[in-house]
Image 1: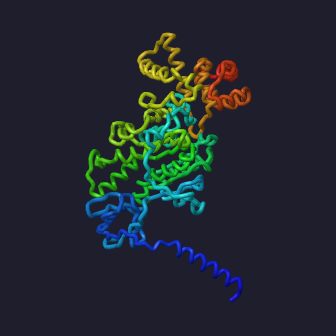
Image 2: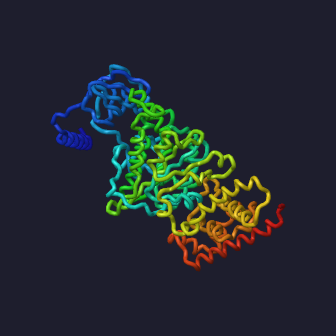
Image 3: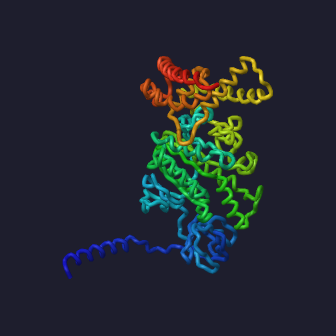
Length: 512
């Protein structure tokens, strides 16, 4: 035997001896049961009376699942894959709860709720595994929500300001731009210190692909995690998806970082919970949902919080999405989610069809944090904007019955139309705080009241580049300090007025 081979054998024997010495020889109880019946993504197991809730279970045929319902003498198990499970199979408890990998290695990756890669990046080298179910921070562990989270969407930042640690529901009918608002918020974090987690529950592969492509093209995908449980996956994975996403996000929050999580959407999550509960013969209530549907989503969203300074001061901001039918906000799941969250952004199918995007209904939308977490400069400019816009909408409705308007009403209508033009914003074009403030300054000071409506798009498109060229220093200070002194405000106002003047001659030559 050669010397090299003998050394390799000695090292292997030494390692094996070390593992044997470390092995525990004390008896360990093992939970073993038998499948009584199975089908449609669930299984009923008998013979495991001491199994805890959410415990992992391994089936003889290779499938895995977790305990979802504990009845007397029977365990309801939700399967985590679509493998075949038959009655009579032996089931073994794995002595662990459902967990998911967490850590920096997940950034830039597309994974399923169990951390298994769905992209071409290979296995995830996790820092550690955390249970998908974790208790929400207590009141003493939380801090006030006072720091703004800029979404880049002017209407939201000015009228429905969000704070880091807030839970703001995005709700509306299908195809009204709910995911677009959330995607723009993710894209706008490309230059900030906020990490983003996008959770897709039962969404079409093409829709998820559009979100990933948009973030890749316009945002910073290396600071994002995409957790995907498609409609073809097991219902158990779809049920776990939002909890796993929150666990991944909490890893960064607990280290003092700031995280934004988008859950798309909780309506499908509630439907999955109803499906699993009905299959397990649990009592149903309103609209066939089980009585605990409020609890399972409340305990999820309560995990979003701003932590106290003693715990690092990190924050986890949640933007859950919900879908309504025929704009019915009084349905069971929408009312539940509205009562759980700190406000809602309501999207209107009527406004969307009229071409006003984002199609946010100002009258029904609210942020219960609002000005407490708004940048001071936006708070100054948008203080009366919501009231002015609401009054304009009411007056505009009545002017349809009259062709002659007095000068005061006509001026109010003209100003309101420019408010609407400023609030209109295309997809994938979030604005920085400085550029948002410049537009609202022009609106607040009446600089654009004399600008024809057909030139408003030109004004909005040219303003960022114009200001970067003429008062870059003011914009840089505005981004960092979030406010301006009087001299800087005057400088910004003069630069904006100069741009308006360059557009007026063109407007004068246009057809009326």
